[in-house]
Image (cartoon, rainbow, N blue to C red; front, side):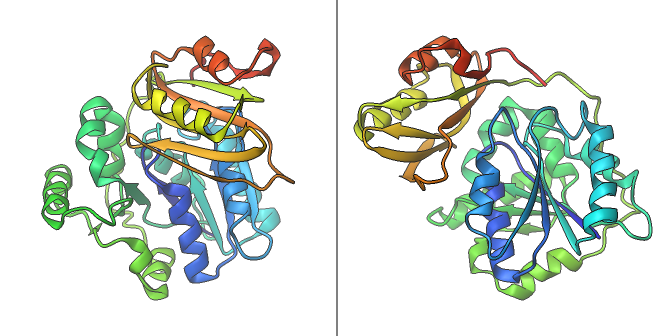
Amino acid sequence: MKVLIVSGFLGAGKTTFIKELIRKTAVNPVVLENEYGDNDLDKRDLAGSAPGELKILEFMEGCVCCTKKDTFRNSILAVSSSLDPEYLIVEPTGVGKLGNILENVRAVVYDRIELLPPVVVLCPQSFNEYVNDYPEIYRNQIENAGIVVFSKHENADPGFLSLIEAEIHKIRPDLEIQSEHYSNMDKAWFMNLLEAEEETSREIVAGEAEENPLDEVSLRGMSFDSPGALVSFLQAILMGRFGNIVRAKGIVRAGDELLRFDVADSTYAIKEEDVDSAVIQAVFIGRDLNGEALKTAGGVKSSSNIAALLSKRR
């Protein structure tokens, strides 16, 4: 079983990249999702887009790099012995140190389990902000990457991308960077990610386990009077009215519609959701979050609907 870790900071586009990898290669991996907060949004997103029956396992609480590392190792061994897939794709939360995750996987590598060079998905437009605000986590991702893959940069200026490449190479001069959008790459490129050999001679840059620098609020049952009211709510998030929200995603009711929203990199997106299978849920991640204001804005009247309260940390 080959283990591919697809890492990257919050909102970088890890799930979207995994979807494209599966679509381009037509492989049928087992996917291990380390969800942030009490939600299964990424699992639903993957399951709804992959061909055939995709096996998705979840860590709903605790980070695979520290608090749940023993369970994580045992899960890898269990997947290998019971499901025996050709590939296991691991998607961490994005707030753990990649070096620690790699050390955890290396601890269970043997003749039936192989660790592939990790992919780090990175949004160039957010590089300067996040490398300054979360330097230990962000730099550790780059220091331990097998390859950095740019995302969300279809309309970016080539000169700007070159500048970001230069900044990344200040951290890792030898690091391979895929600056052309991965959606333009062919099957052979993606298959190379699944067949490359890890450089076991290269030392992992680990880090001390530390308290998560981010808070999270998870809510169920959020509803808005109309899609326009949801837009106003998302604009308020970007203006900082509920705290410094780095990442938010959810499925909410807006009038007669069920909509999925996504907030990352100072932008938001909204799309229709499958009414038959959706669960109304949302998670907000950042600093100095105002959980009560989020609950009020989303029409959550009962405290029993709060799945995780402010200041709940990993």
